[in-house]
Image (cartoon, rainbow, N blue to C red; front, side, top):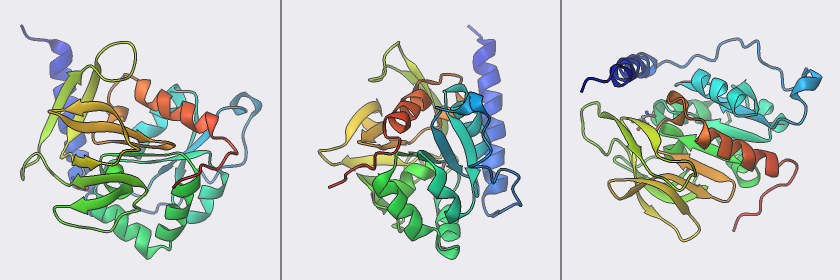
Length: 243
Ligand code: GLN
């Protein structure tokens, strides 16, 4: 039976893929108008302030998802902007491109330190950046998530899929949009697996660190972002202790 919603979703996915392609080698540290960790009106008080690393990839969709999930989002392009945050999202995109930017702008070490003490959620390329070890090919990472990740693990061509499956989140099946996704091939004992695809973990949590190999920001379902916002709200002003 043709499902118009499914068709629409496929079209949206294609657009997203195109955006990924065109953003691939573009580093655009635009002059930002959102240098606004300060300047909050009273309606925003109490909402955790969550940054999205906004150097490349689909950070805008994360900002919308965070707003809808009870957080106050802001785009982060400079290491100095991290100080005001209760949590951070590392979005999807191209992990190699993001890594180069982080290394070139003195961001890598500051971010690694931030991840030791704050909630951080990596989606797709962001999950690759968080992993303890990256394969296919090997690349440097922040190594704050006890997991081994294989890049582009679903084939050499652009591989995209929408999978709807039961997860550990309450209230029924979750739609998961995969775009040239990595695969989590190993996880340590302290990593909780919240969802799987073909037996491999696709949504995991290790204390204040969360990672998804799919793109929760591209689905209308906000349960994944809400979970991260809850973690950030709970961790406000309480640095995490990692072993
Ligand atoms: N294939 C990308 C990488 O290896 C990740 C793709 C994505 O974020 N959608 O970095």
